[in-house]
Length: 202
Image (cartoon, rainbow, N blue to C red; front, side, top):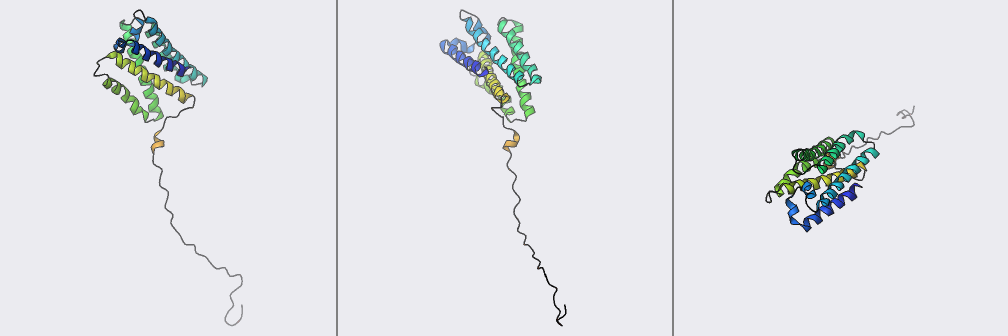
């Protein structure tokens, strides 16, 4: 369910941008405004489907403790999807949602001791730097959303034991084996019979 919803989200998002280039600079929530507002609701519906699928995987694998943040993110996403685009509460909720998802995966990578933590921390910087020539918040926001879609899919693969993130131990060099040192064996001769004396007596 998560992978299907993610693929459909990417396809719809690409098609919308190819159809009208003005969507490039617009935040995702503004896609609901205008005559083609149904496109925005479809995109938000697919994101909610991803969140529901991820939550179901947590329940199915009995990871109830890890459900707190995904459920909170699902609630925030539902509010963002239904609230007016330029409402102050909507804007704050959308920023809190992006920050919460980013911190959530940063903490999980840190606890797992994964080296992917550094790539995760650098992702917003890279996306922001790529959008500097355009100077568009919409590009940055949708770039972060696509990155989080990718992260959710990886997370689901890990939950289903289809993927394992490399740990620091995987990059450690194997310890050199001890060099073989030759030790000559001392063979002691065993006398089965008592040695005879020179006078012939035992």
